[in-house]
Image 1 (cartoon, helix red, strand yellow):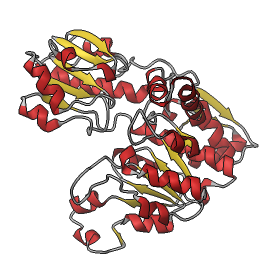
Image 2 (tube, one colour; image 1 turned 90 degrees about the vertical axis):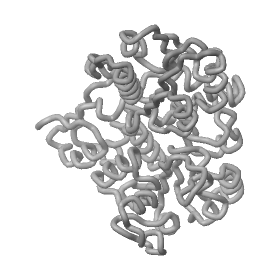
Image 3 (cartoon, helix red, strand yellow; image 1 turned 45 degrees about the vertical axis):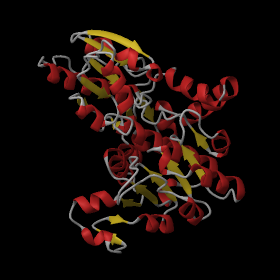
Length: 396
């Protein structure tokens, strides 16, 4: 069996090597001819597996019978086209959700320092309470941060039809306009849905962007097309009274360079790019492919990840909660590195090549849970905040 795998999928040989021949190809270079003799295809989000790709590959006699994406999102894969050709499909829901939450917390902590505010005094609105948004809500709440949540599809799915009939709040959920009215921070974690009652394309349109109160911090780590980038650029360039953190963009990789320049933190769709998350995604698709071909999935996650470069910190008295959170977050991940990298590479290569180059050469990054914190006697009051943020706290 020949398995074509995106070149950026880690541990591909370790996971898929036992199932067949592994051929690595850069994600944007996967074309019909690449699949002419492929039995399986393993991708990430930059590869569009659409009807045209599948049809042309099949016209070349491709034996393709399985497609897997090592990502949470699936909007880059035409599942109807796969079904039409009797091609099995699997994604990896939740694989990098913890990494995206790490990105959000690290970004909020950075901006709290930059703008001199306490995160615990802000109200955070979370739009989309699925794999990522649900984890973010849990962590922020455990940290003592007030949150409001918006997820109309969940309201509908849970049978709360009154949530669609004008109720402002129902069973813990609120409508988007309530979050815009009442929250200091707005975090978007929605999938891209182009049509229907719960379409999310330009969910934050020009009208809603104009309605954001001065001082609002907008963070999008969901899908770029959920925000009207032109309207956001105009608000930032004109009034300049809100702050934007953007990891996802319209028209990736040829994103709006002017909007990137105006964002407080601008990163190249890497919020979920932890090694831990990538390995979970690879392992999930490995198990799905093994099941598809009727072979046992003997390889476990144990041993796939190396030891973290910073495994343990000891904190003593003298740090405020905000300082302790920033110190611990930056020991694991600092989003300013990725912001600087995007701008540096864009100047050197142009935005599209720079954007992809940052992703292709992304450095090792671990998750918050990889770091154990030991709290000395004078620092034990930090336990609720740091444990809530996701760090492992050593036993007293």
